[in-house]
Length: 108
Length: 117
Image 1 (cartoon, each protein chain N blue to C red):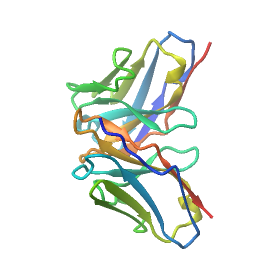
Image 2 (cartoon, one colour):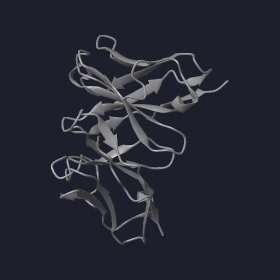
Image 3 (cartoon, helix red, strand yellow):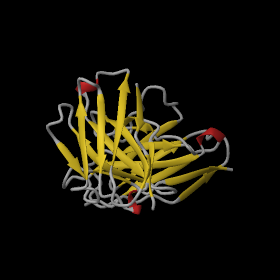
Image 4 (cartoon, rainbow over the protein chains, first blue to last red):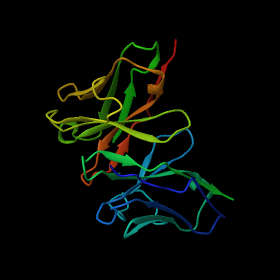
């Protein structure tokens, strides 16, 4: 089964860009989804299928995928972006959803 | 779209609970659904899946044989029967809608299950 790896923490100053990576073996042809979870709240989908932005999600959120690494980029970071971010894939061997361990974004 | 979970609480090891999730704002009988849990201070863990008509069900290895997912499309409710509970099952349990591309596109606020003697 797939192991999905994220850095435990990322930090960025307000107005700067934050980049959060998600990787694993045999990742190249798997769609990656990204979730934002603010403290004490339920997760919210911010990027689906590598780079699609759901309705209501600010354009500052974007996603990309190259080879075995997917990246969530938050441009012009704001204090309200401080949250845990999780990537999610579907394991190709059994179609089970798999979450990365999560990355805590700190806005300096 | 809204999803509202209920049924959590404090339960002794070995006992059971039934969690419910009531949707609104979309055609429930057209969407597959999931349960996902999050232990205190930990990450997200997928628990179970059910197809739009209930004919296909799947479980994480950690809960297979102990948890049962079901749905009633007439009552518009999703269920998760959790049995033979252990301390490792202590978590917030979220229901989530299955997006067409494999994502979880909408989530409820969760219901907390605490397994403790």
